[in-house]
Length: 75
Image 1 (cartoon, rainbow, N blue to C red):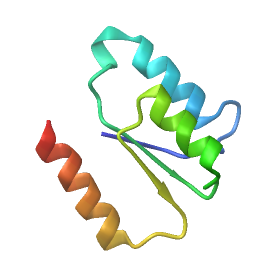
Image 2 (cartoon, rainbow, N blue to C red):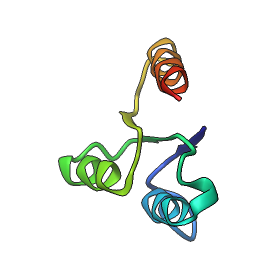
Image 3 (spheres, one colour):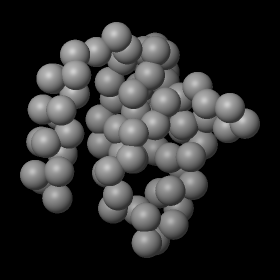
Image 4 (cartoon, rainbow, N blue to C red):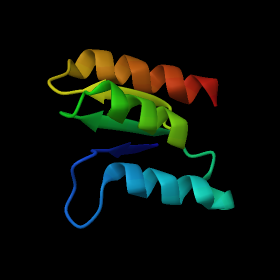
């Protein structure tokens, strides 16, 4: 599993997600976007690029772990 923030130095988490999904051997790796940018456009783009979940900051660590468990149990 990979946790990505949208705002990162040099590139964005969405660009990293797009690159990951273009690699056959990384396509199935679960990705959660964890970010302070909670606009609908960011959420929509993340899911369109193949994100498994989108969590906005601030977040509950307990809820984040529950979501991660759900995603990993699906795989």
